[in-house]
Image 1 (cartoon, one colour):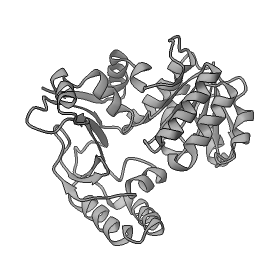
Image 2 (tube, helix red, strand yellow):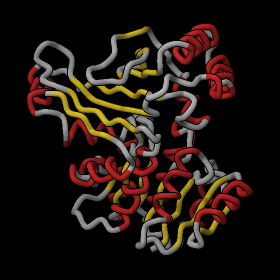
Image 3 (cartoon, helix red, strand yellow):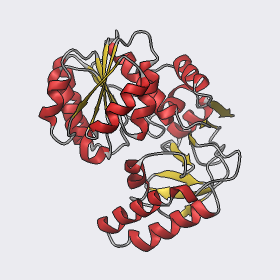
Image 4 (cartoon, one colour):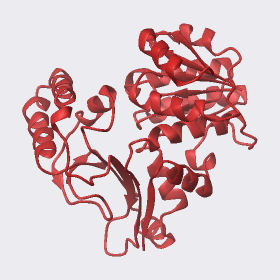
Length: 328
């Protein structure tokens, strides 16, 4: 089968490409990126299965012509707030299944519009195939102890999510832009999370290693974040430029994400540790392959746990060197 990978030269895209090119069912992998030079160089070194093409993600008509013959699309283009909706609607128009890395920025109105577009074509799609959202949704659906889920329903309290990462080894520039959007107050570490400093990020929690990484993240967010969109963009650029100096202590995981419920009757938590920083890209690749062969009745914008089951999640984590932990 042919898989089209959008944003192939980016950080997540390269990981997804490595996973997809190694699968025997993938006969052709089309690497699509605005930076065609990097995509071509990467594809030549990766596998003879690879082809490459240039496209501007903001021009959805350009994308449509590249989807001919594709069994599915893996979308790793960021920032998602700027590009995801247009890409998903372009895939819906072609009737091509798509798994998108996503970052939870789609409004309810946008989700309904996208869902209806895919339903009309009888085609499945998934948005949110990274660490958060993505792994967090799999943990909540398949691994969180029943007591914790029941506590959330009984108290009408939503499940909480967190993402932890080592800034020197995780994420591309689009991720840093997202991380600097709303660095909030310092909060307590979530249950079962890696040691580090944690900050409120809307309803979620974002963590980084303590010491220099946390200090620079806090200072840049505080000093420049108050200047509005321009300040946040500038702070993300500075942090990304400084990432090489933000190394964590030996043994610190590259990334982790988890879910839990607050309160005394929480009943537990579930998390996944990613020591190599590849589980987001691996999950995106797996979701794209599943959608290409999706035999379920669901069409439209589907929840990720409807596509990736517990055993599949365990396999992806295991093959990527990750560890899923459940706290009762």
